[in-house]
Every structure is written in structure tokens, then in C-alpha cells.
Length: 544
Ligand code: TEU
Image 1: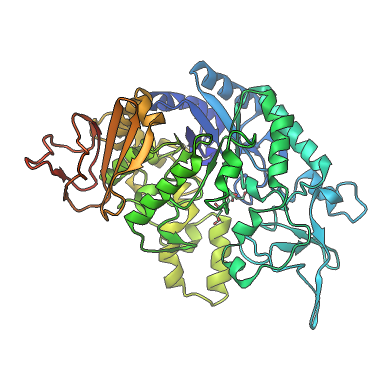
Image 2: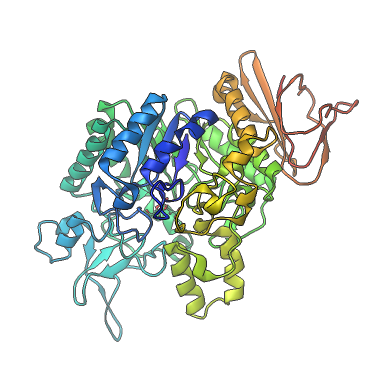
């Protein structure tokens, strides 16, 4: 799977914003990589308060991205290459500019009122009214806003401009199922479902306890009817088509993950769990992390899939800093090490655009450079309010901001990295001089060349796709070593998760024979005593 963030992928008309024709133009790149399915981040009509995750019209293409004809042409071009397309289903909330909300906010008797979630304010001491409960929004402040003074409050887990839909209303669910059919009938093959565990709410809206306030997402992801609705969606829509679904499982705990993906339950096919990609951060702050904890997560995740579930494997997406900086050290060698891990864990790999060339975080120097509502609201709530010093927040934001993943795709060393002939909507990383598709396609030692080889190896090696996963050395602080075994086909993956070289002695009984692929420049990495001499960030896959 390959995730495209359309705003940042390729601009065909010089307005500085990526578009669908830009994607169609670059399908060769995806095909050369070995991509078989594309996940397209939202391409729908939107006022872009949250870059398309705030939808105004689910059946219309965002004008900046093109037309429905462009969409149909893009889809046909993908199909011609044997690729499938899944789109982003953002139905926990709409934009406040969606027709339903424009109607709903007119008043309590409007027929669309009950499409959203409204509650009277609590009478507060000395103030006229205050939010119905203490739910916080992910983008700062309360999750409740009054459409106008004196009115009830509507719920929004995200921005003020992203009111949450009321899934308990059968009409809302029917509308959603209809719009899903609209796109499935067009020929898309399924959906990545945005914050799908959040769709069901506890109608009593009890205040979160102090403990729960540390992780409101866990409460939001545990509504009383979420599994009923997902089963209904499968019964009424998904089961009628040949589809694939992947849910963004923010807030889903390890124990609850299988409830979404166990194939005997008839809900989703896969979910994204975020403990791995978030390991080096705590909100907007970075934090120290250790390899054994990361390894423990991957083992637990693997066990949770059991025999009737299936996992995803990913190192980044449009909401995260660049993987190569968050989990690696920014070097091409670390990009290859992470590629090896992502493509040999047991789960369907989701590659985020730009990671295949080792794109890094942007060298931010000023808050004015950021576009993301999460970054701007954070600055407002933390710095402008006087809680945190600018000099404390900026360097952390530079390392954790979602905008790191959203700078334009780097195609060439030329102006604006070949992304646009105009002024790019977000700055282009100056390292595009060397980190770009054209240069790396011509260099057999590049990150891109390695991704192509690694993907080809995976696609021709069933044991690397389906084989049992077993961490052979969970406590080792620097090396991630695991086997993938399917009958007589036995593979060993060894990754030096560090810029320090290491002499690594495998546990007894684990014997690598031939090298299937390696990031090492020189051959002969096995020392006479059976110890592997691993170069910085070396990753190798061996046949056993
Ligand atoms: O993200 C959900 C989510 O909770 C986080 O990843 C969120 O982006 C982060 O906590 C904010 O700092 C999904 C989408 O992937 C994201 O782009 C949207 O902004 C969000 O839902 C709302 O639709």
C-alpha cells in the first residue's frame, strides 16, 4: 500500500497545490516501486480547516485537486496498471460548512438538527453557561462549542469547524452508507477510515476522570455501539463489494484491537495502531525511547492478530514527523533499516509518500512557517497564553509537527523539487538537491533503489508476507532480530537500530545461511566466530 497526501504529491497546473492529474502523471513511479494499492488522503470538497479532513461535500472533488473527470481518469490509469485505490472515509465528523450542519445550526426544530450532537451547557458559577462536560478537543480547548450565544453546544472531537456526526441517528448512517456506495460504484476498492473507533458516543457524556483526561482518546474509542455500527456497515455496504478496509484506531488499546479486525466478527480488515510510531514522543514533546519497548509492542501486536486477524505495518503517515527522524537518525542508512523492518514485519505495509526516498523533517525556524491547525492552535494555547516559552515549544514542534510529513514530494533537484512550477503551499525541503526521485532512481545505492529491491524480495517471498513472526532476542538494546518462518522457508531479519557498529552474536540455534538482501556496502559481514559485524544501521535478511 502507498499513501498519497494529494496536496503535497504533485502539482500539474502550477497553483502550488498537488492535484489528481499530478498523481496520474506519476503512476510510473509507484509501479516501479511495486505498489499494488493506493490510499488517497481526502480528495473531497472542503474548506480545508484541516486539509480535507473536514468535508463539505462527500460527492464532489476539491476544486484545487481537479474534477470528477480527473478522478475517473486517475482511477482508470491505476486500474490499467493493476493497482487498486482506497479512499479516505472521514465520517466521524463533517465540516461545519457541510449542508447538514448549515441546516442543523439553524435551530432545534431543523430536520437536520439530530444529524449532530447537541447538549445544553452546564450552568456555571458566575458565568451564563459552560460546556456540557469536560471533553477536550484534539486541537485544543473544549470539544464543545455553541453555534451561537444562548444556543446548545455541539460536539467536536477535533476543530471547531469539524462537528461530530450523530451515528445514533439511523438517517445519518444511511447517508454515510449511500456515499460509500457512490464511491464503490465508481470502482474504488475500499476505505481507510478516519478515527473510526470514535463514531459511537456515550449519550450521558459523563465527565472524564483525572486519569481519563490523560488519554481522552481511549474513552472516545470505546463508545457503546461502535461494533454494532461497524457490523451494520459491513452487512449493508462492504459485503456487497470486493473491498479492503483499514481503520485508524486512535485510542484503541491492545486488548480491544482484535475486536475490530477479527475476521469472524465481520467488522474491519485491518487497523492502524500507533504505539510504534509514537514511541519517541509524548504529545508535542519528543522523549527518549528504548528498542526493547518497541520490540515488545511489535510482538504484542503480532500476537493480537492471532489466526483470524491481520495487521498493518507502517512507520509514518501524514500526521507524524518523518520516520527517518523520529525512529532513525536522519541518515539514508537509517531509512533503509526502517524500510527493512516495515517490509518484513507480519502485516500489510503502508508506505507513506516520500519515505521511499528518505525524506526528512523540514528545518523549521519560525512558527509562521507552519500551516497545520494542530501546530497553530498549539502555539495559541501554549505560547500565546504564556504557559510555555517559544524557545521551548518551537524546537519540539519542529521535531514532532505533522507538517514535516506534508512538505512537497521531492521529484527532482530542480526548482521546488519538481513538485510545482508555482509557489508551493508549504516550503520544499532544501535537501531536495540530493534527496529526490530522479537522483535516487539513477543511484543503485540510494534509499529508493533499496525500497525497490526490498519490495521485490517481499513480493516474491511468501514467508516474508505470511510466515510466523518471532523475536529471537527481545532484550537486546541495539539489535532487532526476528525470524519469519513458513514451513521449510525460514528467514532471519537482523537490524542494527543504531549509528554505532556492533558485533552481534545470535542466540544459539539461529544460523543464518545465505544473505537475501542487505544494506551493508561490503560483503563478508560474518566474523569467523559466528558473530555478525553489523555496520551502523545495517539491516540484513538471511535465509536460514
Ligand atoms: O487523525 C486522528 C488523530 O487523532 C491524530 O492522529 C491527530 O492528527 C493528532 O492527534 C493531532 O495532533 C485523523 C487524521 O489522520 C488527521 O489528519 C485529522 O486531522 C484527524 O483525524 C481529524 O479528521
